[in-house]
Image (cartoon, rainbow, N blue to C red; front, side, top):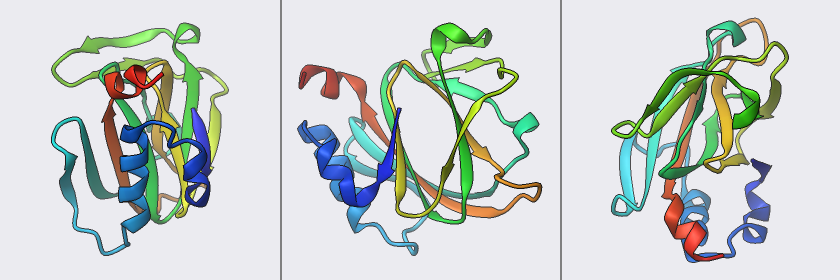
Length: 157
């Protein structure tokens, strides 16, 4: 997992797929329409959505195999939990169709605060738990998740 400011994205854009994703994020405004936006077909695309954050006890850890996530808020604030896969018990086995496995929440998850202008990048070995309320009150957020086919980044190594 990497969390940083979008202004530092160039440090992480060492392959064309990541560079393309960050270029898209840098041009995005709060007025961006919700839904799926293709960037490079199904290899790189963005999902933009609005929702309310959830209490920690209602949030779920997830991981993907086919895609890398770059998550960035356009509005609001939320926490994102993080853990390495070997440290967690599987709650729901990996679904090839949905590209997701769900995991039991540890007793003390690492929670990273996210606000507009910051991003978190999650590789397939990173288990993450998005949508967490930072306080006791749920708040509305607008978020973009850019999905990058992991093989595009692996091939660039």
